[in-house]
Image (cartoon, rainbow, N blue to C red; front, side, top):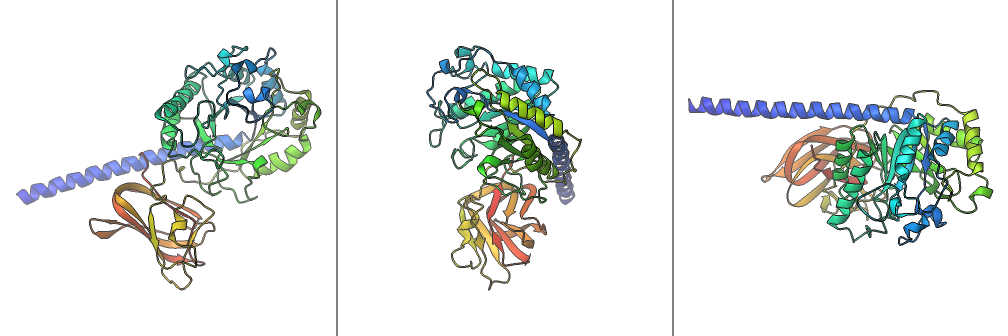
Length: 470
């Protein structure tokens, strides 16, 4: 009788766990389909306007003195309706304004800092005027926000809890005071030049905050230089800053993507802009817009307002020329099914790594050094290579990613070590160069990959382990 009761209890527990797992899977699938719909709508918008306008406009520098006084932000002719009509003339569908750039000046009525537009001679909420003007002209609204903030000393090795609270407060203001925001573009985060990591300020926390405030808002970080082109890392959209040399390979893109470029020679207005030729409409359309759209990539063209808060005549004229030779012909090719973006911290980074015999100097540590430009490579003499990560203590995890520089490995086993024995996680057969595996949470002291099938000698750029909030 006791055995029967225990059996029924065990059965009930198993059914409860199974039901919870099934519900989690269903929720995850629903969320993924919702994201895919938003991503498709994003690329179908095709073409929009970046607007770099902030205190750098008045300093003739993209990176001005972070102690520059708000009194420098002094203009009398600000006309966001002119911006919107210029965007419409080029058949653009949206705008994106730099609410705060790297020097920390906020051009909205924020309660988080005195370093803002309401303490300038203008004393007007530029973000509000921008969103009102663009919506009135039938254009969608995006916002840009920099994590790096040199005025508030939000810089590498100096980040405090109050900095994180300021970031959350400012993002909350931007996503609650101005109606529907289609996308939030983040910059100055996990870039080689900002050196603020997703661990210094948790990307996962910010991502969930954005989705809580506006579930339909796409979050994209301008981090395209670091991560593989065929995986969504810390962004809903792959990004390419073309002026910095970032390019995707023509015909190979399967990710929802964004490419940005200024129509002038730099992002913020400079004193020579009115007399310096801008990029031509023919080149922008034929060399960039059409080609990018054909690769499922949205193109955002920056136009910098001058010190009066207006676009220069040469920029306005070229935008009109774009509108004469190009229009949005409707939806682009449908996106394939992609994995949900990676948003949490990589637990494998810089942990103890081990492997079967390596090829020359390409030892195991190169596959968890947070660089996709280095790799662990197996010795060609090893027929069944393996790779392993050890933790200092038992660790919870629910996602493993194997990133190769070239797709090669095609059959493998993932295992975990717990309670003194190796246990199976899954058998894998993904042939993409970024292999993402999500599963129910386990607790492990070690993770091991047994490589069974491959086309060339196995090589792993990054072996990643995550414990996602889900």
